Length: 91
Image 1 (tube, rainbow, N blue to C red):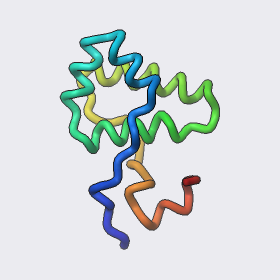
Image 2: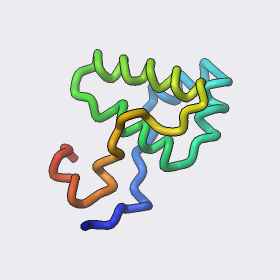
Image 3: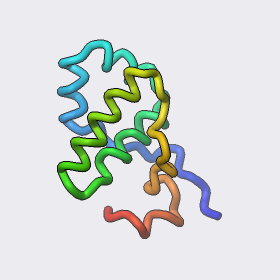
């Protein structure tokens, strides 16, 4: 089995940054997550193909992060970190 790439990180999307600027408590909670936790949320939200799904996931991200959750629920993890799963995601 291929090892996870611990150095893989998604860039933070602009709409995340804008939401954090508008909500200091969300920003504080986000900053309290580990790098891996932030990366998992970014991948989960941005991996959706339809804008409606992205919007729905981002709304859920805000709720979960403000509730103190550390990673997205029911997400198997960022496939970009595993060589064996990269075939399932577009570059």
